[in-house]
Length: 149
Image (cartoon, rainbow, N blue to C red; front, side, top):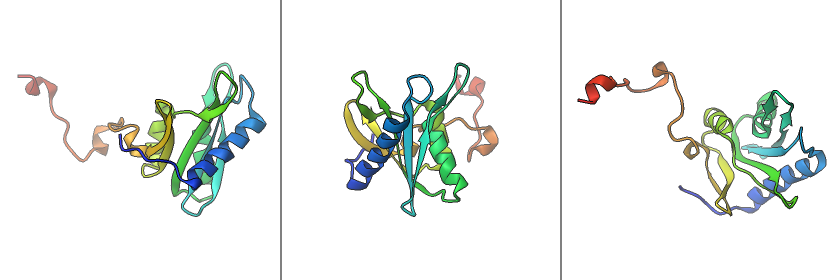
């Protein structure tokens, strides 16, 4: 995986997400916060909202906030949660959020927990073979019955 060390701007983004989670954390309803930075330098925050039957991820609400502000060129993403000791730490995006990032900000840097090391990686590397309809591909999907012979 092509990963990079964090910059001061990355740490600042983490701190903004951390502040949101510290302010709004609730053990059942608000377990994750996220922050995205756009090419304008603006930061948009998001908060996980959950109930018994549905959850909306923090990353999706942060991306939506940038979209609503018509500031959609997202360059950085981070999500945070609390660990078992109560520390606010970087958490990796779920599969749904990885797909969302692949659609809305494939060239953004995503800050992740890379087996204990906090690093950043391009969003498009988090889901290298995304789900797509055949008409969305730039190729023709082969016939598996003729390929297995």
